[in-house]
Structure formats: C-alpha cells, structure tokens
Amino acid sequence: MLRLSKSSPAPPFAHTKEWMRRWLNKKLGRPATPKVGILGNSIHQLSLASHPPFRTILQDSKIDTDNPVIVATPTFPALRLSDLYDAIEYAGLESWLTPEIGYPGVLSESNAAFGAHGYGLCENYKSDYDCEDESYELPRERVYSAAFGWGSGLKTRHICLMRGVEGLDVDPTFAAARGAALYGRWRQEAPLGCVERDECEEERQREREGKSPRIIDDEP
Image (cartoon, rainbow, N blue to C red; front, side):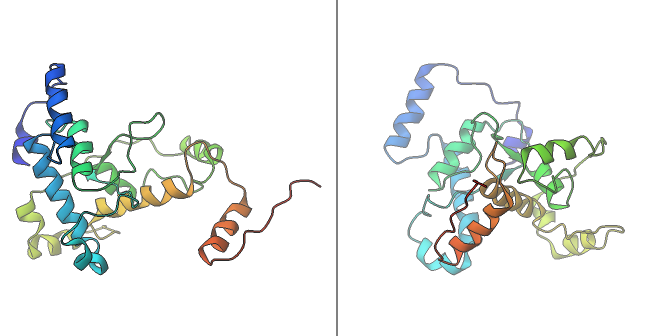
C-alpha cells in the first residue's frame, strides 16, 4: 500500500505482451500480477471479516459471485483500475462498479465517506428527474479529506480522539464502508435511467415476503 501511495501514476499497458501475460495468468487461476495477488488477498480477507455468519463456510472457498460488492479505495496514484478489477475478480467477487457508460468505474474512499455523512446525496434517488432537480440545489463548496495510516487508524486512542472531535455528527469508524453500502443499496433499488412509480416499492416488498405479485393496470 505504501508503494501505491508514493509511486508515480501508473502508465497504461505498454504493449500487447503485458495484456496477454495478465490474461494467461488469470486463465491459469493465478493473479494477473503479483500486485493484483496482494490486493486480491486483502480484499478477500476483508470480505471474510464483513461476513461473520458465513465465516466458517468461506474459510476454504471463495465468496459466491452472485453477491456483488463495492470496494471503496484510497486515491493512490499508482493504482490502475485494471488492477483493482482483477483483484476483485481474483478474490472471487463481483463488483457493482463497472466501466459501463453512466455508472462510476471507481468509488474513492473520500467520496464514500462524504456520502456516509449525508452529503452529496439525492433525497429522491429513485427518480432521475427528481434527483437532477435536487442537484441544482446542492451547495457548491470545496471539501478536503484527511487519510490516516493503518497504524494510527487501528489504535483505540486514535479512534476515541476522532470520535471526540467537536461538531462531529457521525461516527467516523467505517465511514467509507457505510458510504459504499449506501451506493450498493441505491444501485439495486434504482438502476440508472429508471424512474419508478410508487407501486414499485410495494411490489418489491411483496416479493420479499414471498407473496404473489399484484397486477398493476394502467388502463383507466
């Protein structure tokens, strides 16, 4: 991690040979690069820690890719998106973050923490039109984020000091994880370009309860 934070920005792939090497490593069940292997193992360990009920099941196997995840990452200059995607794949996971048009390809740790504190989010996020209208009313201000190393971040005294900061309304512990979880929830409830009627929430609740869907008739 220290190398990623202090190195120069990662250049794009130099030639096809590098791409072929990565592709072959993945086909053979190996990480695309040694760096990807380190990142992938770290992500896998984080996934085990965040799934306590399933920890015993997951110890000897990868997590089911039917459960997409979101990884909030620090803005390391040497971290390539391709390495991040390959690391998530190597960990046996599927990411909600994709390079598709309209969706973000990466969620920075600072943006995730910003959202966890209730800033920069649409109240009516299930409607593209309402969310766009709200965006015009959002305050335009410059926000700075401060990152701390793993050593200080894990110390009880440091966490207690952070919690005691005057005017802090939200517990800073796992703020980035909470912000990423918010994005994941909203991504599932309101796909891009989707404008739902009020009845849609009722239909989803019926499906969760195992009830038959109610037929909605648009005809007068």
